[in-house]
Image (tube, rainbow, N blue to C red; front, side, top):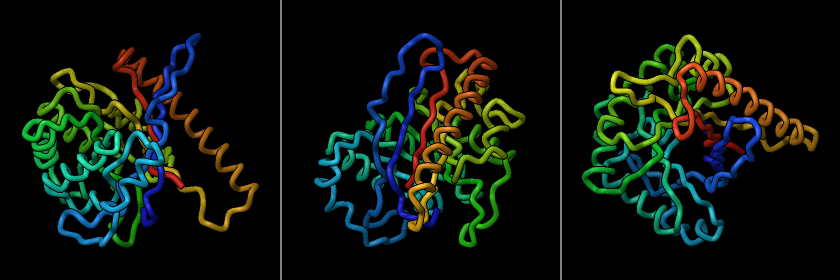
Length: 263
């Protein structure tokens, strides 16, 4: 979205009854914004000067993503430079590869994984496919259809996991909790939670964004927004539970969730 990328929230939740809920070490994080530039675009950001400040915040995960990455694919060395900066402050990267509403291919996504994890041995675990496909934007055009989102996530995930089967795929990165996308994608008519022909799950972590605040919100609206987010997560947990049952996803293979942008 056309807002500063804010903090990152990851929720690794068990769905079994009778067990305590472990708190993810990646509960709080942030996005790698604003950098000097990448993908042929110069932002004139000063993130490279701010890493000591970011370190003091003690965030444990930092996302390389958003519409900057989605429409301007970083080079392999640009990805690695950001990954190395993140790890130098003791955090882990979550890296997005773009679809760009048809601009990029699964082969390009697989090439990024190959360069980062195989050639450069960075062994990044968390990989996002695409960004905000449901967003209607004057800059980026009409939303991508649900069927197209399902198709590209499956294609990208299979290609990327063929390169490195150990990675976890994050998606669909909806711009808000959009039931018209999440309901069909998570165990529904356009399901992305099953396995490919090689027995690898397409998506491991279900993600969406949340921007409830405009800067003029009242206290009542702040409180209501928190309740809305909580209710949306509950809805997602139900979808995930059903999808887990549908595909016999248990233990380490059970679906997880993340809110990767919010304000």
